[in-house]
Amino acid sequence: MERTRIAVLVGAAVAMTGSAGPGLTGQWGARGTNLSIGADGARLEQDCASGSFAPVKIDANGRFSTRGRYEAHKPGPQPADAPDGGAAAFEGKLDGDTLRLTIRPADGAPQQLTLLRGKRAKLIRCY
Image (cartoon, rainbow, N blue to C red; front, side):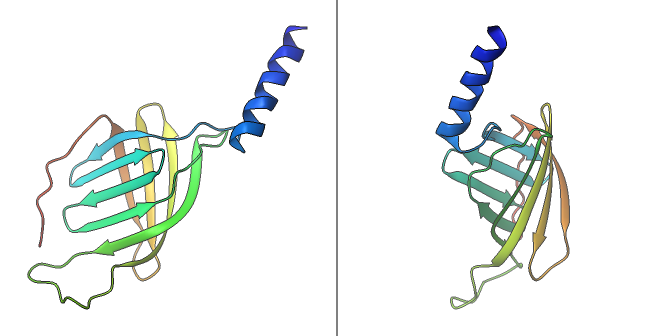
């Protein structure tokens, strides 16, 4: 009886959310990086870069994968007609209060970050 009740509740949750995994939210940080994730998506701020991606759901293994935008900034004035970054893949692995995030910009080398829940870094902007 109890197993049936649990199965019905899990099935209802999956039907309502479209996914069995919980959404990832909160403030995450590491040296030179702040990541704010809310119900409407994520905003990444780094010393010399920024990015954004859509809301994510964590799978049963604590992983997620999504697409978004990533832009590396350069020191000094930026041209007004410079592009606003490019497409990027964001892959993450949640382990307790640690989020391992890999950013794969379409036009650059991958970047791996280890972020901690609740941490906020002081950013030293290069621009």
